[in-house]
Length: 250
Image 1 (cartoon, rainbow, N blue to C red):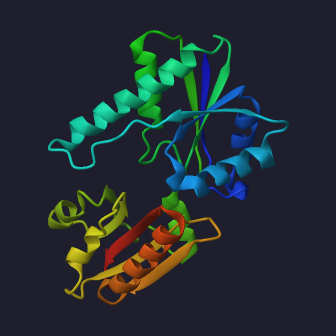
Image 2: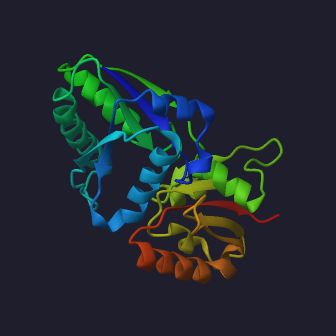
């Protein structure tokens, strides 16, 4: 069974690469994670991508997404358990298809950057119940969109950049990181760095969509606005996807 993992950017149909379009048009059946009614806008964006780029009426199978422990004692184990449950759910559907079916997964952003789909499909392959071969088509990541929207270069001249999560942010700062991309930070951990006058922030939410919101400037001055805008987006849509760059001020 052939599986294409296709990065589709932030959801706007114009962010699809020519290579991604070719992969989408080679798919017989698309599998998508059903995350419930709270993310209806994302489902509509996915439907528009397929309508725009795939001729005819593509077959889409929604697979209920397993619940995830959001407050685990062991974060790493909880994530692996969730990956395993997801893989089992996909395996069940894949076993119902003909062996020569070409299956597609639409992956938000880039499949190789802070996304679980590659690992989940690897788990399906490792179960040994299916003869699975897969490839990955890169997409425009939220990190690239964030930098472009703010018209900034991510790295400083001759300097490194750290890509991390909200969970690890404070540890990375303590270790000396001073130019940081932060992803998966639903709690806005950066607030704990406010008040020092040391940091600038470039924040963006729902990047590449009609609801894109940007805030930038000294962290101390921007924090309240970021929290207000973030809350408005979540109230309006039931979800929000945001990321930001933190760097020490010159």
